[in-house]
Length: 529
Image (cartoon, rainbow, N blue to C red; front, side, top):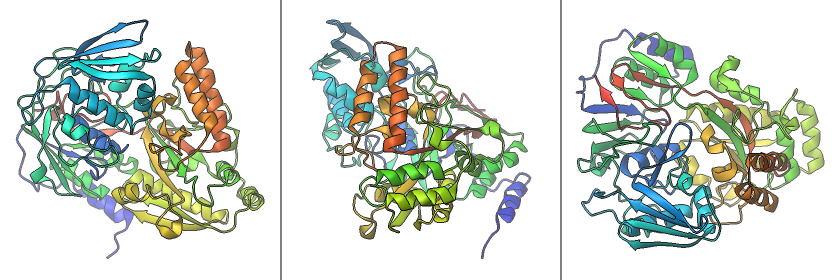
């Protein structure tokens, strides 16, 4: 039976007044609806935000990040800097334990840093600047640097993905391109593996021996992490109307990322709060495959800049309210120091699809199949995927719209082969704006696609890598901004990715949940009244 969108919304609206269907949960259990299924558990392995959230439950980091995006000590009590910024000694806080009862040592952390850095853009830059990384004793992590790297604490406390999780040495010695399956961290929660139902449920239990910081701002992943719940249960619910019903009836306490079309239904319930906790919003993009036709041709990639309307993409997600989105959007998060409108001319103004057809013809497009990967269980990505498929079809491309779940899409996008052998042509995805505030952790504008750590799409651009290095070495803000301006102009030539706009993403939780912090969802310092 086919259910119309209108019928679905009516069902959700009716649930506001419906009786509770589930037994009330005590104040010691929090029920949470994550943005998508937790397909990957290894916090070093993927850029998926759901895995980052899981990672911060189970694992801890050496530093945290506050609401001004400044690093603060977390697992470390502090650090010293010597030799003109080229010698850093980080000291672990006493009493830290892994979930299996073993002590946390500096050797564990050294191995963890090395593993994470092979998968992370900023971590890789830190290791490139490091001459020696060692553990001279159980509580000291030592970096001997080739040159000063002031962003060292920022790297080890970053809130972007993949998270710099500390794990026991025996796990950290696992090849970073092979997932770990044993979840042993030193974070505030233990992962209850025997209660996991893949695709449906993940359970976390309070780690009673967790040693919290006593100071610092309680923002993002910084400051004290005091756990007031015995259990936190993540429930994957694919259908948006079912999520609304569950939150309205109190069967769930918190929905991470409610879809914009259902916000009016949630606002009608006075027992629900809707807030924006991440001021950097969400930024979306199309990622082309630089290895396979047709997007191995830079002229065809550049033609796509003239085909896409950022406004159309944003309105497909948030509706017509211009206060909910920002265009034009370049490669850096709008309204942050590195953002500019340099080189964005192809992305602004009316779209001339007939003119784009001529561009494709001149570029030599030969009707190659364009396999668009779209995650249908992620409403925002499904929306922009549908717009993308429509536009590409209208400009005469041979579109194959591959609708699948998010986990399957993440797996398939690692295939470097041709479409006929399970490969792909492009996919739609999104990031938190904080990921794109500068080049340090910006995967989508890297030119290192010929390296093992290259992000799927595998753009190779020596010029982009050169400009990124210039940004790291820049002596002041003005020099950093100039490097970013030149990077954005170069991106319009190489087209590593196509920015589609920035939008506001609220979160929704019931009024009896208090202590929700700024940043991505975290589960310490919360209570239920």
